[in-house]
Length: 311
Ligand SMILES: Nc1ncnc2c1ncn2[C@@H]1O[C@H](COP(=O)(O)OP(=O)(O)OP(=O)(O)O)[C@@H](O)[C@H]1O
Ligand SMILES: [Mg+2]
Image 1 (cartoon, rainbow, N blue to C red):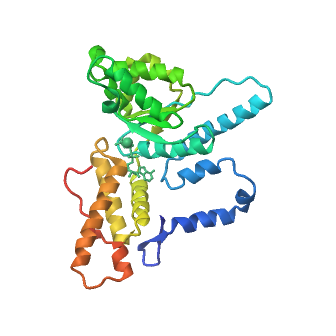
Image 2: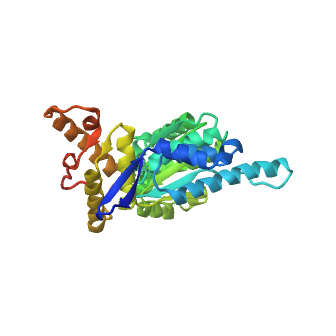
Image 3: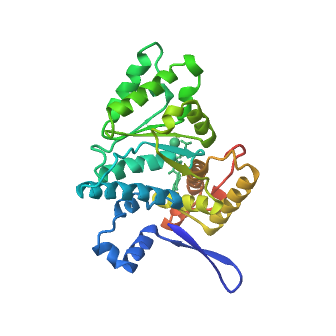
């Protein structure tokens, strides 16, 4: 669902909620050609429509997609084509959607026939690094074997460089690089992490940078986007936010971003607030005598409580 603000004659602002499905249907009706004539980016839009914002990111994914398709056509026409490396780096602060987008990309690439299975495996340091010499290489190889045909997403990739030269993390990095060569194009590796730490990690492992030609940046969300994320999240659960609840949230996001923009977990923070509000609403409903559908659905401003230290 998305919202639209309108000022009425009394100067009050109303927020009009519109169902997302309704909007998509309207969009399709306004552009009937999109339905009849195959839209080349349909696969991507279908998978990414539910995400708020991310306009630059969508464009970048479309560029990659176009490049893959055109490369194939050029190959068919006998033109010179280089093989395409699709491994990627994701850089963004906490909660900016890195894991969620990586998961969607696994499905997109599967639909594009670039991956044979399209499954998604999320791993961190503990899944790769072992406890004795040789253990790490085996663990890493096993994980990559499981990922073949899909996406292997390594979160906080820089934690592999944590202990310096003597650390087994280095063995994991070396094994990853070797497997990328042995299993060229059989899986897609995504290394993710916070921007500053990723930059440092790459500067310590110069060989890695060229193996990840695509970098996607995940910017922090604006207060308006955070509110839209909240509206969508509650709609997915068959709840809605009263107008007052929406104002309270937006005002809070504005204040929080002014105060501590570097300490903020974006979409994850929104999810925590919403989950908490749903619990508060349940308590309120238990004490209420009115259990009509509207009341059971509506999260009021009083259900939204911001705890100190959240962010
Ligand atoms: N653009 C978006 N639209 C809708 N929901 C979003 C969006 N971005 C993030 N979210 C929601 O925010 C939450 C956190 O997203 P996600 O786990 O993908 O972030 P992350 O970047 O992987 O975070 P971390 O770095 O902490 O692992 C999820 O519940 C996700 O659904
Ligand atoms: Mg994540």
